[in-house]
Amino acid sequence: MNLKEIEAQISELEERVERLRALYDQYFSGIEKLEPLILRKDVDRRLWALRRIKIGNTALRFRLQGVIQRYNTFQQYWARICREIENGTYRRHMARAAARFGEAAATTALGRKRQAMFEKGLKKQADRDAARKSKEADESTPEQEAAAASSQVPFASLEMPAVRPSSTSGTRLAVDLPPPVDAPNKGSGAGVFTGPRISPLNRNPFGGASAPAEPPSRPGPRPVPPPKPTGADGELSDARLRQIYSEYVEARRRGGESTASLTYEKLAKTLRSTVPQIKAKHKVKVVDFQVVVRDGKTLIKPIVKG
Image (cartoon, rainbow, N blue to C red):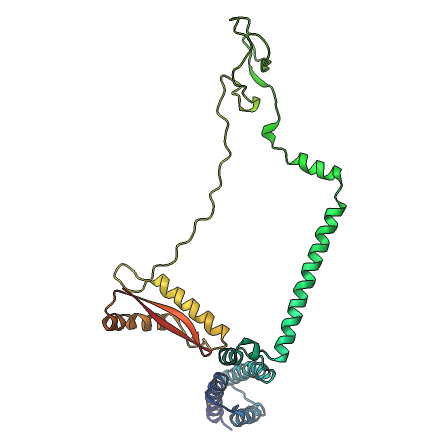
């Protein structure tokens, strides 16, 4: 077998693998009712035949290995989804059943068992936390509580004598002690000292009293305003389009839908081309969009505003 025939077989194998992937996506979404096992057996047979051929061309051999790795990844994904469908835990099917029959009726026996195990684990964790806190409270002594309380005394509450420059020559400093409250003022016969007492820590060592320094307040995080739905020209802003795109991708991933062919540029182009049509039809000035899920499918719903 020459290189052209091998290359043709590899190209045909790539097309069949891509076709098989599309059929499995349709089967998981409910469009196809049966699993495409016939095409899958044909792909397995072609892979087995190509693996038996000794390919001397490095490029063709690398191309074949890439197809094999991709097909193995698909097989693991398909096996996991099929196992969830058999167990009745596939999220898309459960969402449809919950919308039709109610959440209690849609939960299978396996799902109820998993939910019970999860709640049991949460209860055990809460019991362990409560036991640990009670043990720490019992082990703490009055001495430890007093030490913890004394360690929280602020430094500003400690009284220290202020220091001022001495009137004599030299560099000696004199201690400025506050006068007693009941000491009489000898210079004026006015009686007792009734002036305000200044904390030694708030006193200026080289003159009069200074105002107490307040600790700098740390500014909290500024709230981030939500992106405006429209820009200055009345069209959808880039920030709003990116928010819609991220919500749409996240909703499709939660629902098990494929996001391989979804790009921001394609979605933005579609929404921007739809806005003028909606404005002309409903005669409004502002058009916004919202991501909704209906019957297990993720949709983008337009919202008109006057």
